Each structure stands twice: as C-alpha cells, then as structure tokens.
Length: 90
Image (cartoon, rainbow, N blue to C red; front, side, top):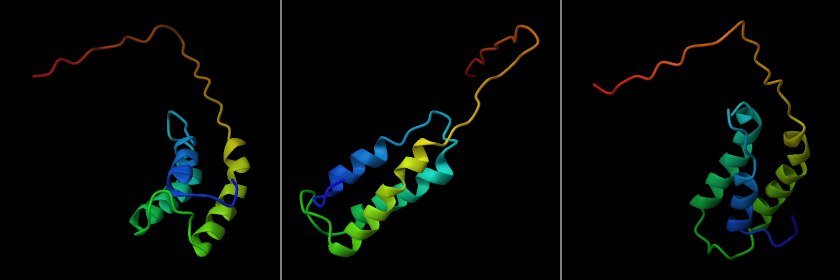
C-alpha cells in the first residue's frame, strides 16, 4: 500500500481477507473496525487518508502477512455416509 491510500483502496484490501467459515475473524476484525472508522469520517472517497489514519493503516497493512499465514486443518473424517435431511418450510 502506497502513500495514496483512500477509502476505496482500504475497502478493497479488507474485502480480500476472506475465509469461508470466518475462522480468521479474530484476525480480520481489526481491519473491519478500521474500515468502519474510515466510513464514519467526513471526507471524500477519493481523498488520501489523513496522516493519523494513514499511519494506523500502514501499521495494519504490515500485519497482513500474518493473516495470510493463518491455517486451519479442514479435514473431516466420517465413518460412513451421513444423511442429509432437507427441512421443509412450514
């Protein structure tokens, strides 16, 4: 992330932190909270972030590598078929 960070650029990075089961939410919540802070600010979408927010974003951005290293073994072993029951809407 360069010095020209803006609301849309931060939102794109935060949206790229994805894991289907949301098991990484303890790690990604910091980024989502920061994005929420940005959206509450009263400056244009295309404006560069103010210095205080830009510094905070750079600190968070540096930590993104650790979010990418987060791994969970998703292997599930079953002892046979598992019935899938569809529930009807009453």
